[in-house]
Length: 112
Length: 112
Image 1 (cartoon, chains in turn cyan, blue):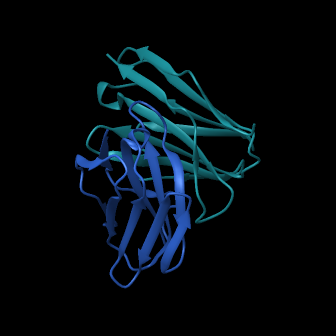
Image 2 (tube, rainbow over the protein chains, first blue to last red):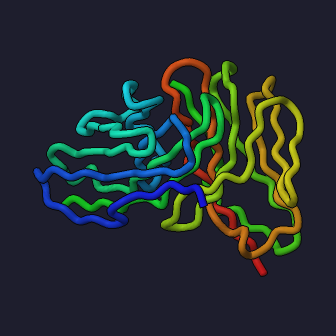
């Protein structure tokens, strides 16, 4: 089945470490997104990409960077992790602007 | 600031009854509206999308959109215990970032 996958599913890291979260999709969608979810704050957009040459900042991009290696792969990096980046991170894809988004299973990240 | 408002609940509904979930949004220039279901610790799962005023039905689910009142709702008929989850309302606002703006969700409990 066409799907959105994320690795790792769980990660514990220390303050100051660099960490990369990876997302792959077999849906054939051009648009990919990274969100984080915090209790009481809902889902918030970090970065999004229309294709490998088009990367855009979302609502809360500070402290994060992304790489679109191919149509199917979109990675999120935390250059120097801090405790308030502890959250549930979701990757999503969409077939077109304004259309529905499909979410991966999420990565639970804990920064100690 | 573009916002999506939902009552956090919990909303408790007897099994077999109709569950009614509501959402308001702040910007009239809104294109697309979505309802997602999220079980604890899992990723959001798309239930319904609606793009024009009126009702849209899919099985036991009906989405209702009223753009003049900036209001979107989700009705769940014949509620089942498996419907117990958090329901997220999401809006694609016109202009700006391509991502969705999410409400914080309504926690729905179906009582057997």
